[in-house]
Image (cartoon, rainbow, N blue to C red):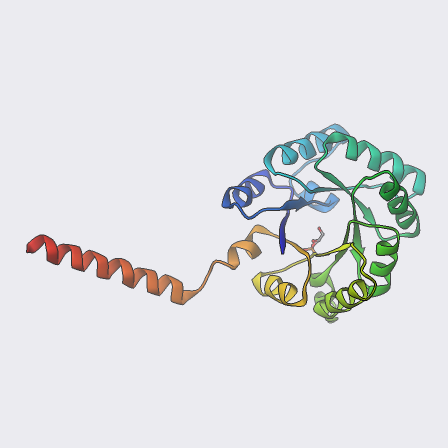
Length: 223
Ligand code: G3P
């Protein structure tokens, strides 16, 4: 399973990269705004800064909504760095644009996926990734994980190479559930990734090991 971090915060991206488990980054206009990144040039510089930290796969989202504008903006984003994946919303012109980008060898992430039908359309257009938003479905009382399960079944039925990028992850349990269902990628906040580390029995066990080691060393020193 690939691990992406869902943030535009450079410190958090560095921390995840330093951990040695990071495969990529996803951003969106809201995450960029949260970091106070506004204005075309600042946004471009920020994408470049993210690309300088990680090895590959940095999703940069277009803010255009018409075919011609999505193509223009997406091509400009893709030209910034070979690590860029152009993130395109699941709208009619977005699907057309994904088909175009695919024909040009530009990787795409189709975002704002909330149904299996949307994922199927994006896969047919040749999207590299589809991003079903689990947490936001859970938020409205719908079962986000069922969507992952359905998309997995459909993609496997037809051998679509499009990867399922489970997004809007809220915590470590979401990551585990997505891994069990066969999502290819998960993108979540650093807190969800670090949440996988935690278990009280690990902490207690380590404290006991270290205390026993210290006692034995003290006893040996006394002779
Ligand atoms: O980046 C897309 C997605 O992961 C957003 O998540 O937490 O805003 O629902 P969230």
